[in-house]
Length: 384
Image 1: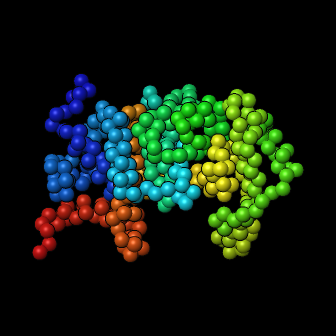
Image 2: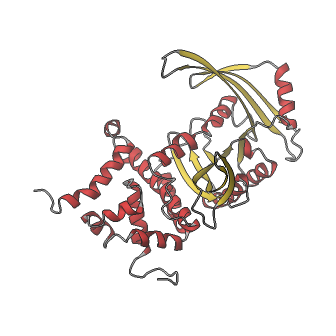
Image 3: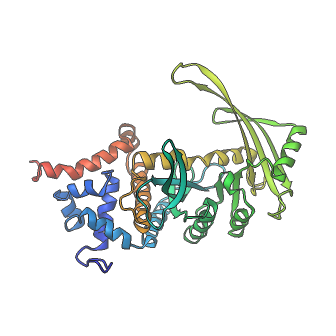
């Protein structure tokens, strides 16, 4: 099969289902999947044998990422129809954008790798790495990965995010109300893209040299603050609309500041200390649509893609494992990993009763799936 065509004896559907099953069972690698090939589970589920790990990797390089994205849209549509993606009490569903580095190596390189110099004890070395921007929906009790876009060599995160946002808006035009990002996204071109799509945007402000930051901090020093509590934190807040200092944006923005104090218990000493954090956000959300408390909650929900998304996807779902070091294969397998994450969480939240959820963690659920695959290996015949 050196001509790059798919082997008609290995249907793409069987390849996708094999990889999808591997991800759900968290087997960890294509080689580990191949070791389970004698299992009767695969013969029933795939209507045929599991392809070899080399075949799975090769076929992944020839697949179209758009087909996997289409499956993601189908999953979203079914969950939406089933009212499984509710909005929070303030009524705003957020689309969170964030970059993630999925791999780094000093030896392996492909056309999609970015490069950087790393200072080591033995001298400077060239490191090859892959970064992506992920988009996820965050609402009331759910986190749903929507799509992923590679950051191409030589471009920054925001450029890839803008490309991703255009595709997400085409595929999920009514899925979200506001776009959230960190301080990297506090750029006029990004704000204008979101506003042009009829959505609002909220980002962290950290660039002290920016005129709007300077003006906002000067006003906050002379105006009285308000106090509120947000998830156990005491917040001293300021909220002003109508800042026109962002000349490149060409329209007023709203700036919200929050100084938050909360009590934390140290794990080692069990001592209770107070921690104070300072936050500054810029948003196009008017006060009539989003209160100060709502803006603060949305601003903190930006961390959902890290705390509820990447951490679990990497540590429990092997999202950062490079199954095949080739740009298309990396993207296809990452998209399948996000799809498996969404399907597993939807099953856990919607199909398992609360009593069973209390006894069954997501990690144990994956282990039970792996046991279902491995059981026929040890016992070909069903028990009496």
